Image (cartoon, rainbow, N blue to C red; front, side, top):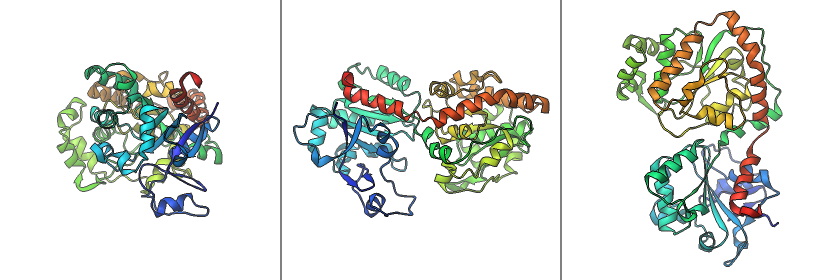
Length: 442
């Protein structure tokens, strides 16, 4: 069977330039022999390298000029999106993604009428609110008259199917191919650690020592659930017993500090619900800033490619993963969730409901035999945070004997999760996209 073409307008000796916008000098530098750029603000194509290249028996890179006007062959035009640009701006009237990227119009017509597909790769983010779906439906379906099943949306929203089904129900959208997008949940951050695992030795998990610290929690940006969790740790007197990073002021708006944010988000009633007094909030505030490694380079923070943060994991008992979303229904599993797998570290996931289930669906094991993980099923954020706070309180009273028993019993789970992370699941997602495009021929 002929391979499905993954179409790019610009291809260099080292790979394709992304289709999302016209290339610039940085683009060309990235794909030429011995070319390089030191810019971290530039986005090159990653969809081929991180996705389609893992299915070269099914897909092949192909230049767009080689697709002819009446071509019957199967092809995909991939577009990578970035969070720095407002989502709706990509899909704005007649000045949206296809126009800005100068996508050849005969290709768009082949998507509309033949065997072409458009793939939108936003797998590093969980953008699936109604406004995001509205934008996709309007731009591709109404403005460009493309059957919506021809639009494959890779999203980091791990509960995407449930959210999109609910959207279609509310909007009375018929369950027919021309009216519904092809939504594919894909937690892309799971895979960024694989090169690290191949190049570096496994972390050791010593079952016979009691770590100095109880919890490890990385918090860079202010988010409401992080502003709530921090005083919970203060309430149960575990801040000094934990590794916690937390800035005194908002990193993106330094005029707002912790107390400002607590007030502006109207948290005080919620603090009362959680048993947190103003005194507790101020006590935590007086500790700030709490700095761990001092790292401020975003790629290093996300990937930790040289394992600089490993000592923090090895000298603490449990990670408190404060995911991107907690109040939103869109479940996220970013690099924050997969780092503990890399470091063989148990965790409590402070995220949207259903995220632990999504982890288990990916093949990972969680820790329901050691504490009550039913918090993952609680849709109400206040009740979910209360359930998490209860676990934290219980752990704050663990004796050294209980900690050692836990470490001995939890090790098989940590070893299992490390191996699942090492054995990337990209292939499964690539095969899924191949089946979408080729159907019964796949």
